[in-house]
Image (cartoon, rainbow, N blue to C red; front, side, top):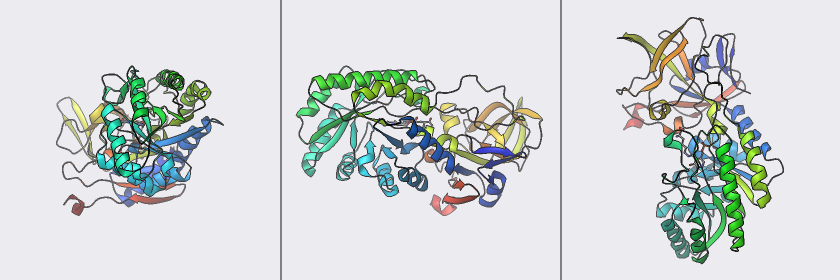
Amino acid sequence: MSYFNYKENELYCEDLALRELAEEFGTPLYVYSKNQILENYRTADAAFGEASHLICYALKANSNLPILKLLAQEGAGAEVVSRGELYLARKAGFPPEKITYAGAGKRDDEIEYALKESILSLNIESWEELSVVSEIAQRLGVTASIAIRINPDIDAESHPYISTGRRINKFGIDRDRVLDAYRLARQLPNLKILGIHAHVGSQITTVKPFAEAAHLLAEFAQELKAEGIDLTHIDIGGGVGVDYHRAIMHEQLPTEAVPNNVPATTVEVVHAILPILQPTGCTIIFEPGRAIVAEAGVLVSKVLFKKQTGKKKFVVVDAGMNDLIRPSLYHAYHQIVPVSLRTAETEAVDIVGPICETGDFFAVDRTIPVVTRGDYVAIATVGAYGFCATSNYNGRPRPAEILVNGEKCRVIRERETLEDLL
Ligand code: LLP
């Protein structure tokens, strides 16, 4: 169910009108639905049924502390990729035994911090890292719990920038050498081998790459068993895609750009991998980020100007690529809808920000209901990889973030001020 709906042509997040939130807190403004996040997490968790599993929410998607606390209270684990994310995860209350740490480039101080925190698993991404973790663990007099990340060489069929599981990508150890990496790990001191890890990519819209990865991991677990290495967990990574075209529905919204294919859901993905992974007897770790938070957030922005140049009509809004970089970086599609639907008349426009870059756009040649100066628009499905990838580019303070729960809301991050630019 969606928690962003029109009521009498006014767009609401749960029981609060976005127009009123924009007037009270200013724009650009990130607004999140608490109940959408909870529902997404609980649905993914329930899909595992009785199977031994741990959902490690990928903090990189959205690491706002109250949102993290919400998920930690639900019993989720955390997937982190830096010292900063590990710090946030611990502050939010994720227990160390539910935290995994991936990343091709961990600094020594980051490895040391993770070892001192006794996290569930350091996911090792190279031969050199294996030796360095062993050395640091010896120096600290601790045992490092590890998994090795395998590069499965599977095509996630998503944007090349977020496809991580091909041999040409920097992540993990090649599948034909990973067995040797485990043999080395067994010999190195102060390492405890717990698992195996793969992450194929992000915004994956079919179950196929997950099923392929699951088969590969299950086969590997068998091979390792034959070598006397018994794994306790198999980490299938994250990457479940979301529907960027059907977030907000209303009969007045143009539908011609909406493709027919609907992305596979977390439930479908979990149901595809369970029969493959469950027979291994290992705990299944799943690291969704986007699928938990993306559809729970919108970015509300105000129309500053409309202008016509040459053959193009532009709607200039007060959010820029510094506030949401996905359209500029990946040509990502986000639905953009008027917060107050006043007319059924539509027009084709480019929706752009105020930044001094031609790449500062949210939509190109997009047909939307006519909006005019002073109107608010909502850019949908920005709860993941939205605020967390903001910057101060062009001297722009970052937007505020609001969490809505029914008829109540609270500011979960204050809008930055000019002083924050100093
Ligand atoms: N686990 C690992 C090891 C990852 O690298 C990632 C994402 C995830 C889990 C979570 O993936 P998700 O379930 O959110 O797809 N900025 C890009 C996405 C980058 C994803 C990087 N890794 C975007 O805006 O689409």
